[in-house]
Image 1: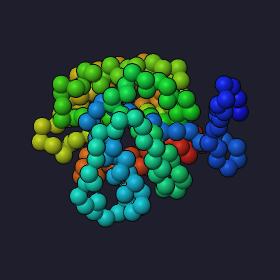
Image 2 (image 1 turned 90 degrees about the vertical axis):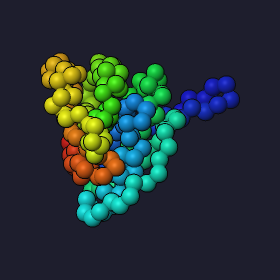
Image 3 (image 1 turned 60 degrees about the vertical axis):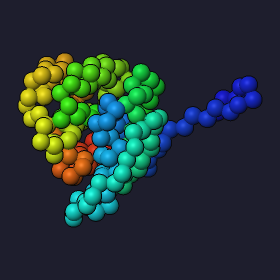
Length: 196
């Protein structure tokens, strides 16, 4: 603890049994890609062990700032969702990041190049060099979505993966319908088990 100017600044790291650091999972992406809905749906999937119908999607609002959410399935994983409008200051939150979920909107080709620039910025950060990355192509439930192979080609994802320091995985999902969310949860569990 450091005291200065009448204020106490406390810095603590989350710990898990055995003394290992419990790293944070960052959830990043442009405004409107479905980050908040993803977190709410992951909570539902984890509480049901991936079984049963998720029903109607819960209401969401664009995140202004940051949300912390715990997903409990085998172990607790804390997801920090940062609003898309916070892009210029995302780097302030990279410390203690073990995994990164980066969402792209598969139904909005006009947003693809901006998302690619954001992704390249994330992957070039030294603070995220050891983070495992899962790129999520969301909104595959919409009739106008682009296939993952088409998006990979447009943003030259194979070249990005070849040059990146991080272990990168990709997945097509629908946070609205629940498609692919059990696999996202399994990836989070495996990543945080391996890193924890």
